[in-house]
Length: 437
Ligand code: PMP
Image (tube, rainbow, N blue to C red):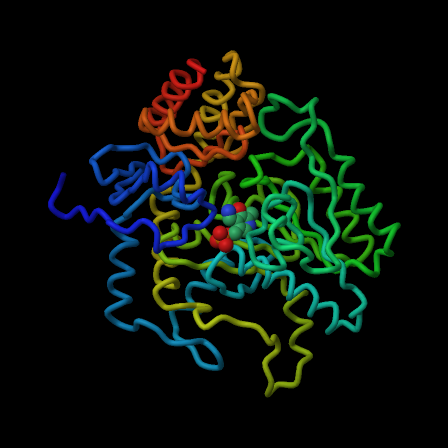
């Protein structure tokens, strides 16, 4: 064991997020180093990071240019807030982000995806109020959706387990059905069936009146719920219904933003223009927490009606536009551009899908889904839901591959700098482990 390893003797003080703490303490998996697409554990085991951190380390780990930018910024200006003052680098980061986003011209900085979602929902409510349409209060989400864990995002989110402990949340949330259909099993890319499920939004308009709905939020590809690409035509249909009723369309691109579909944002890949986009994760390659809400000028302009001497939006975080995050963001975008990270994602999307769909012959595999450099292999249930997923996660870990179990779906979102050899390595490990099941 190297000298620098610090093994904690207290595994209880840290109340861990989304963790079965007793199970963790019985078998603590502790990672203390990373390099490129690999992690290593405190006992020296090397693991391929098949989840790209948690859908976020698009350029791989410890990229020297990003590391240096953060170090330099920390030495120059550690922190200043942006409430009525600011620092140049946050403005530079904002301009660089919106440069990647056709049709979106402004960004409100947050510190996480959850904060980005709640910020976007609040902007939507405030936008309608500023427009004299304060009666638009309904926020529409979708079953199986993950929009973070703050109050707004949880309200529009569609994963029952995440809501159950907390009771009633935002009272005017409504939900469309998910798009998970039996006939779409083993679809490659966007499935053929389910565009008409977007008409659930029309049904909500019929029920409540389109004038009562403020916004609809969807992940273009739902990720944390188990990886579900949108049916062909589904997002287009949502856009049409939003346009017909003056509803704002929010794409939650916390996972899909920054290259996972081979384009800077997924809305470009799917050819549908949203009014607001939430992002985080890949914005700084996950090195320093940062998120954001991108908006069109049309949305932003409405806020300029406010009197000039008061804030045009009564909202903000101490760390909005934090200098270290802004520096990390700029360096990350430099790396994405200079190392052609998004191009690599585009080039490898087909081989990635080939590898995943090549597992369809295994008895344990009952569905495969893929899109860009993201995918899920759905395992047959064995015992309770989640048992097969947990067992596969443990077995894959032992074989040196990290995947993310969501129920019995093994989700993967490796760094976008992976190579064909890495894809082959992942494929071989998956086949060896899942083939034994
Ligand atoms: N939205 C989506 C689509 C996400 O996938 C996530 C995180 N996986 C979030 C929001 C929340 O982001 P965070 O964990 O940074 O709060």
